[in-house]
Length: 107
Image 1 (tube, rainbow, N blue to C red):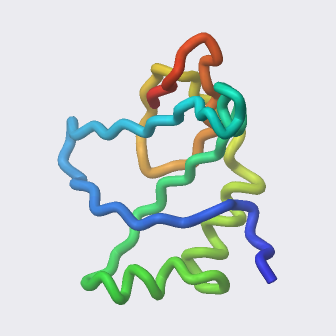
Image 2: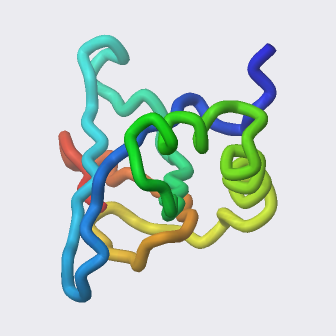
């Protein structure tokens, strides 16, 4: 039973250096007749304090403390908008909104 408010979870190693930036890309697809699959998407970046890949995978399993906390954040504290071609601080949760006039939306 999948009872989380998100579609999927991914692990990405990211440097915590000040001034470091990352780009999240959403694109239109032929599968949806040249449209975006969704006009909005919640992106929740959570910092994990783990030593190994195995510990990281365990930390994000459904039912884990980290997973439950991330799910709660997405339901109660993820209404801050981020428009296409805008930047925002991480970690944190943002509601991304695509720019339908472009093939790709970058955040």
